[in-house]
Length: 189
Image 1 (cartoon, rainbow, N blue to C red):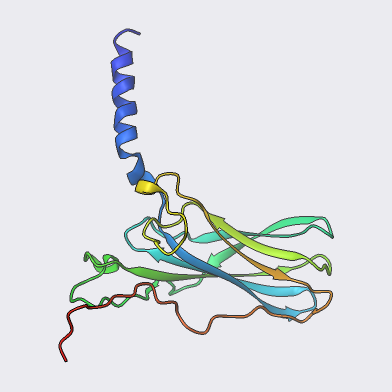
Image 2 (cartoon, rainbow, N blue to C red; image 1 turned 135 degrees about the horizontal axis):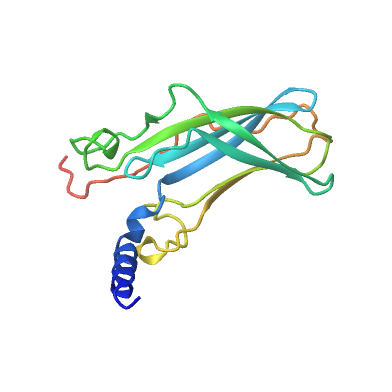
């Protein structure tokens, strides 16, 4: 026991030193939408925006859907669409992004889809997806932890009242979001 303690302390120190490198801080953004198909059936779509310097995107995701008024708490697996994972960043400076082996920041767009049949018509359906951990490069939010420790989860949600609007679909963004905004201060005219 006397000789094992230094080894355990050494392992703990190594883990503590490198633990920030093991964090899954790769999701820069997300959105979730639903499209009415027929009756109580709809297609759920989740879009994840992945920082290329992080870990790989999942092959499928688990989306929860619930209604407090009807007492339902369920989930559905959405599968990654074939061909998804295209880079959406275009660096202003010459060079490659982290998506293609370079050093400029790079973001990929991943899409997941699945079909769900709601068991009842309820006024308060919530479709939600959560993943830990939000990307540390996000600087437009009011709270970014120092040194990216204790990174909060990213959560997106869409709501549906299929009593008042039984054939309703959610809004869908028509433009890809701008990941980075760069400007030059010494521009000659």
